[in-house]
Image 1: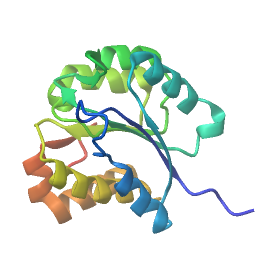
Image 2 (image 1 turned 60 degrees about the horizontal axis):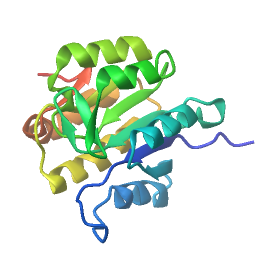
Image 3 (image 1 turned 180 degrees about the vertical axis):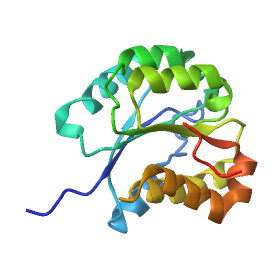
Length: 189
């Protein structure tokens, strides 16, 4: 039986207040799937309860091939905006304690990674192989282009440090401009 393709488990918040706004990371995920580089689960999240429900699902054995947990939300230093509130990295770490072992957590959110101590604590509590994301407020189009490059790289079977180093080597100007960082730090200076 062929090995299942690696997957991305994406939770996405609303980008704008209008209900007819169609801004989404779905085209990036669709591109990866159409190129047969990855499979994905995508869920819109409007409340903390929904967020925690989907995190619980991701942690179940049936979703173990979804090695990348991708948060696509508005972000702030040390947290993500869900509904009208902020969920901190500490809150997320409590829900995912020990459940991200061997997996990567990607915060495709502005500024979340600026709180280095909270990111390190999150990684330690969740046992994630790596945590990555942005330290700056990022441009939508640039970050969407980078998401495609990053997620493609994360689907690779090479060592995690080699995946991030390749991105840094080939797209260093973009990673720097976006304030992209990893925990532990794998990017070449």
